[in-house]
Length: 118
Image 1: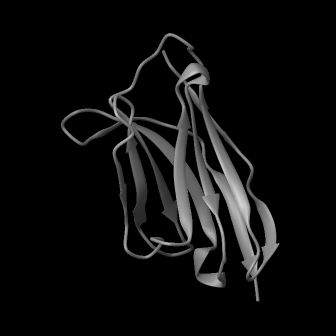
Image 2 (image 1 turned 135 degrees about the vertical axis):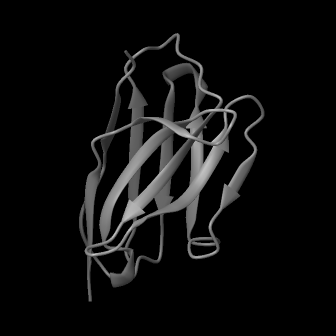
């Protein structure tokens, strides 16, 4: 069973940056795509960005376009989320997921907390 482990969360002031990482436990595992999601306090989980493993195709939610950048390291089976110009509304638990070809999240990480202070 493949596990995902996120890291890089923490407390940052508004306007600051954080870089999240999500590593798959198996180096030989090749996902169709990987994605980042966020769940803010009292809200449902929302999609942020996804990257297709084969060709690097990327899709962003409009709420983070221009501020967040998703990237991948195929050799290390790791996906990153570079977050710039953070605002208090970005506070939440950030989770990565393996996305299958039908668009479903098959494997989820445990999440990492990001808190943006004003």
